[in-house]
Length: 185
Image (cartoon, rainbow, N blue to C red):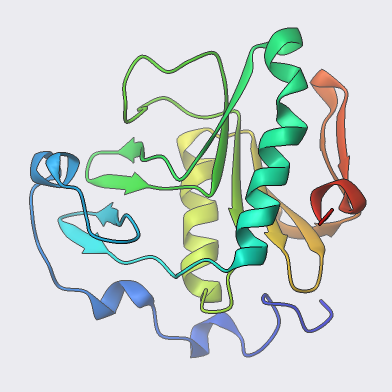
């Protein structure tokens, strides 16, 4: 890791952002709530604030929408940004980008996406990010990716953990997104 957002002190030295928020509501209340500004996640009764994305974060997010668009017709892959996903009882996360085969049956999908992508922001904490990655995999998301727009590094999170890679691939669909494609400005 070359000093990107995943670099720095080990995650056990970083305080979890989840500890900072103490608003307790039911899942039903959460799902009916629109928050001012950035939407929030739900973690077992607690409303969890997310870090503010940067402009570069938004550019990368938009690039993924463009990159996945041709696969909508050929493979039925549909990408969404900043949408709530129910990963289990009391657990609702908002991946930066989620890709599904076909449209979900609910506004807050409760079945695994095909791909979950986290795009790092300067205030992201390693412990919080890795927890989300584990949750996506435990829920059954087969492709979990992390993108660092500052260092332009790509990572895959699989059963062996987090690995830096040169491109992000979905071999079963012939997808191979390079750094140049993902970080195009």
